[in-house]
Image (cartoon, rainbow, N blue to C red):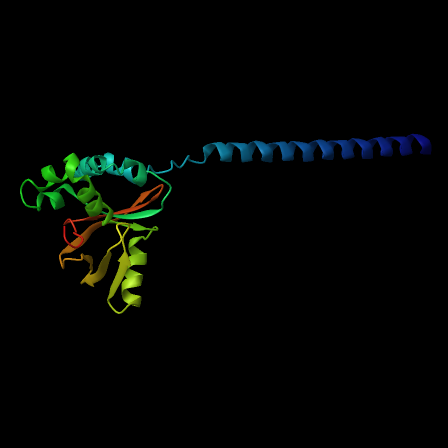
Length: 197
């Protein structure tokens, strides 16, 4: 009788052990499935386009896009970068004397147009917060070199960041931190000009 009870107890332990193993395995499988479902449900974050892609897709930059194409800068501004572009809006270009844009996009004026456009570009990616921090750190104004080679000076005017160009002209940043895969765009309300342009 003792032998039968011992065999029954052993069988019971083996069964319980197998059941626990099956339970553990089922729990592990459920966790794996749940994890897979979570991974599938995570939203796919699309990488923003390049600076040129974003400008092309924004109706406020149609004049800028025309100028960039005429200057042959599409490839440059689509490259790895990163760049910070102070992008004049259509309204900014409209402030130029009548006929200026039409003259600048002519093939014979490509070098001048390239200088003007690259004067709006700084190497590196500087978000609005970085710009404001640099202005504050430098006692209210911060000068930096552009890709064209000449400097621009950034300063605060109340809550606005203002860019002063080499000729003393100013432009207000009216839209900030438009993220691109190869940098950032800040829209400005006036075309800035390097010396002698």
